[in-house]
Image (cartoon, rainbow, N blue to C red):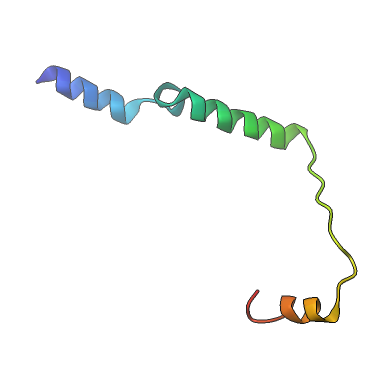
Length: 60
């Protein structure tokens, strides 16, 4: 019975790094990427009237 209790205790107290090292590394690496790199996103400055109407509608 004590072994089962210890197993559950570890389940609820283990860190993400201990539970799933791959997910932990992915999150850590993404945080580093966002902190140290700039991401430029191209955008259009001139759009058609139809696009302006659609963007200003209740659907957006």
